[in-house]
Image (cartoon, rainbow, N blue to C red; front, side, top):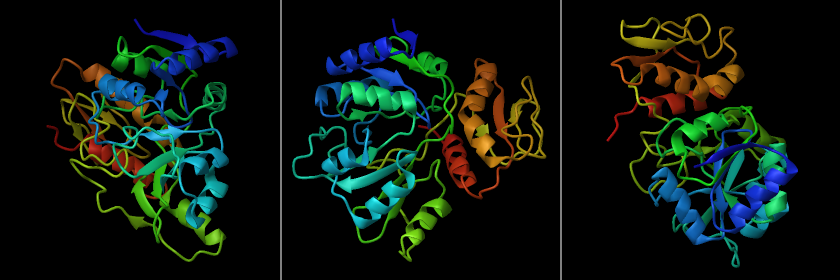
Length: 328
């Protein structure tokens, strides 16, 4: 049995005790709910891979309280310093070379000689990190390859009985995972699109006097050996098949609208009736969960209206493309 409990100081200490004992705790962040384990304990981290049925070649992100802690784990570079100053705490993950005495378990980074680290902006996530006082490895708290969880209920539906505790902090604010940038080389490399847009990242670099552009990762879509989370070709997928760029539903479809394209079907969902891309990002995973629930056990499918690729619309389209990809 997996309890869902509200967040209080007492319950955060309970969650910390579970983590210290090698257990698994789902907790809210500003992006999506994370499935946390002690990032320095290989056995605990192995529990994440088992619970999610996640391939062990897919690295995890370690969450910490401050920039200072992050740079004790990963080698600080000029790019990393600039981006951390601009966007931490917040939905940005930096990939760095391990420091010589980095305690993060090798399984956390899938055996790679780099680590992925983030300083979350979510108040309750920060409190949990402060109480536990160790890095917490935390991918999204859902079965591997499925729709990411933006509520505690989503976590329970996918992982009940496989994890020890779920901390309920309400719906996640941004609704998209963090942007991931590799800052370990001569040029910053975009490994995953996310809640901070490509344009915003480049503006942060330019504000510090660096005239450079992000390079896209070679393995942006891959089937094995990803450099970062979120690079597998099929990901974020509902049970129902997905059709993209739909302007009207077929007879067997639940249409999720956006802007001028209204939703249709049993729920008539719209990511944003006003065409607000930030609202669409916040609603994306929750509405995929809702649409999937009404198509489960039927032959109905999910169709999704076109979403502009401007700003974080690029990240929304990345998630949708992977959700609609062929599955094994």
